[in-house]
Length: 287
Image 1 (cartoon, rainbow, N blue to C red):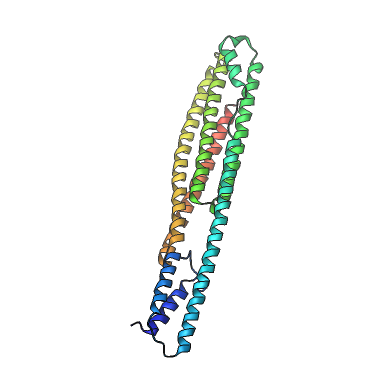
Image 2 (image 1 turned 120 degrees about the vertical axis):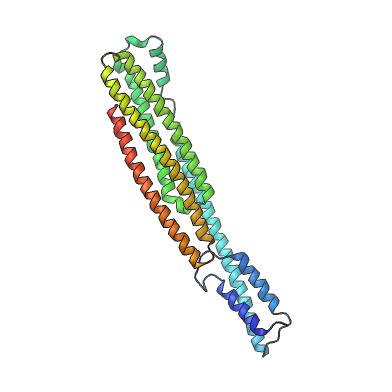
């Protein structure tokens, strides 16, 4: 037969698991309801010194159960609100990425004209469409950056799967823009050489060095972006671990890992900022 003191101990343990009574991380509702079942069963067949003590214990137990239900419902509502907010932000980022996708600027028709006998065209007659393509791609880049800004500013409000979807869409659009930039530069260079091949021989050699350096920087940027993606995914995993941590010791350890990873991410982003500046400077040299 269960001793009434075991019942009281079960009630105390249950009480310590209810949010708001003792402040800690995300509640373990499964463990809490398991303790409720244990506590409820412990009442069966037990004798208290006084009937009033039994009634008080039972009433306290019922109050705690009601509190658990209330807190769990509130927790589920908060989760639903965050889920809807996460999806809203994700959809906003996707829309922004779609708005950043390159479109047809008419450059292809100009390239066809040059390829089929446009050598007698004036230089300024063909460079206008190239400038339009360039401006279009710059605008796309600016629109894409707005998407990255939305993600960076709201990533703590999003679930991991929504962040991943948004991240992949932004990267997909970035690849589209990068391919168009590469095509733009190659086509522009071809047109330029067709008009000024002899005069630009020395300049072309210099441009090749700049482009080689730019490609090296872009490769380094790509590698750093892969590392950054890995670390951001790892950081999300660490936050999940932090949310699921059941002890202060493990929570403290995970917090330390998070600090280290966040510091590493800041360093990588600083390097990426410098690389972007160098790439931009190189591209400016080629204008």
